Amino acid sequence: LASPGRTLQPAGERAAHATLRSFLDGRGHDYRSALSSPLSAAEGCSRLSPHLAFGTVSMRTVHQATEAAIAGSADRGMAYALRGFAGRLRWHCHFMQKLEDEPAIEFRNFARACDGLREDSLDDTRFAAWCAGRTGYPMVDACMRSLVATGWLNFRMRAMLVSFASYHLWLHWRPTGLFLARQFLDFEPGIHWSQMQMQSGTTGINTLRIYSPTKQALDQDPQGAFIRRWVPELARVPLPWLARPWLMDAATQQAAGCRIGPDYPAPIVDEKQALQAARERLFGLRATPQARAEADAVQARHGSRRSGLPPTGRPRGTSRGPVRSEGASATPRQGDFFG
Image (cartoon, rainbow, N blue to C red):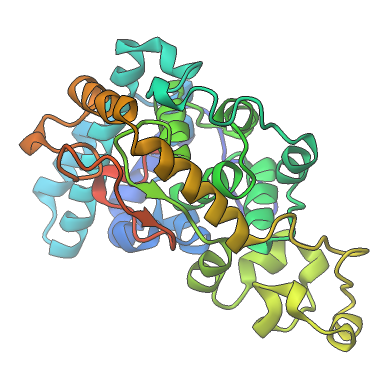
């Protein structure tokens, strides 16, 4: 793992096997609960994804070592955590197979009814702010700056970055996906492009997961340690305003040494207005006969065969689905594929 003085994980086969052993021998005990926060995930996740991507350890080796650790563990809590990890290894391979089965999903929408939805809406100013970590939303900016510096980010925060780009900023998944692909040390095309589309609402079958960046800051970084580390402009902002610094009055901004505008940007969009517009567009599209027919076709080709349910666990015929606007806990089927 990266030490305090370095931002990148050690590379090579020896480092890969040491990382695997440290996870199976202890770090993985709180795996399921450590997934969501960027603070706990840095140690609690396996951190094997870059090694799997570069081939310094094989999936077979990781799978066999994990199964052996489960079978030999006297700690029920550890065995439970590792069973969750083992399931995600299977989904890792599932999504790689999905791209091999239909390579076009790297370039076009899963659901062709979504064609034209965002293709002509790329706002260069919004895109540049998102890439630079200067959107005015502290958790989004902290996650992007951390990713650019380290090449890794936990799954929930990756999903939040894509959700914010796709729904709040209304950016197409292809340019944002290319930017992220260039940052990830663990870039795996099959996982990456499927998740880009799932988190952008263009598969036609998955629940729309819209993450609130403010709520994610409050839930996953309650003391502000992650934000203060990666967005130093906000280092002196009092905790009650850290997730929403634009609400500070002038006197508080002056005392914190952070003026909204000159020192740290104001929110690039209004969250409520942006989400309302996104919901209206997507729900309107999903209600059309073409979209419903395509949802059945996508489900038949790419959905889980287990119990006849799609990856979200929703029955067929419910493609319109609810919006999960607060980024509720990821299910085992949408977990830490990038562990």
